[in-house]
Image 1 (spheres, rainbow, N blue to C red):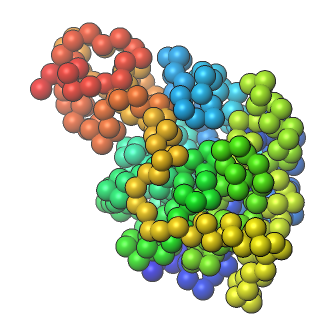
Image 2 (cartoon, helix red, strand yellow; image 1 turned 180 degrees about the vertical axis):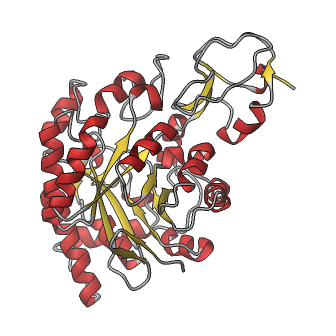
Length: 389
């Protein structure tokens, strides 16, 4: 199995599990809240904090889209991302906070301009979000930075996972880790399928781990939080990296979410005390080989997470697949006009969320040599009928 470093931390067999606290939108637009979360991550013993680097205009467009059958159903997607994004002018100051608290600082980019920006911040690694694992152009661009790349397999089929890995390798990425992920929000313990982690490691020959969205034993009703169980159990299955969401106060965030004012990740985010507990239990297991749960219910929940080797989307994940990016017209395109890929810059088509039936991003280079077969209004998911063949 490949081994590599993220800054001064070794990743791979025989090394402590590398634990990433994801801030995502849990700062709710408040710089001081973001700072407190980074400080809490350091205090809990996490190795890194991770943000997401996008704006509403780089991850989607104002085309009045929403994500039905998810916890964000009925929320306008552009409005959601506008409220949820981390302002880019915070990054240098937040990186200093992370440095002062002894944790690495990096991010998930969602377009090429974000990759360029993060290179300016001298991040030690890149994370590709589960939704963006289908964004082959973005992964090619990230690979060319020479930085370690962590990808998540949420919602993917095996062939999609392999394509993502091959795209990175063919674009000269050297250090790759793959995180098993269930992109249910929140994920059900019975659908986590932690037995997939060692299978990933064996099939791809890279460090494997867990990007975790579990929290509640009863995921449907969002009750009975057991924030530590899945991460701890994943280490038993050989997880070398764990990523999970961190929040200051879940109840306060839920109240904001209910008013569409923030708290959008409340249902799968750990509070600082929960993060500290799971880090402590993981380090104890790494030292002694023993995990001691407090209750029989926790032991039963732990067994639920083991599941089976699974390389297909689970039932809960299927609703999330609609949010993955695909190719859309982002400007009006006239019949006979050539296609120009924007990649977050100037162009008439781009990879944006939600896909909603648009062409897969793997076809981008083919479109660059083609012209439009008809007038295509901005905000149209591209289809082969739009392309002069």
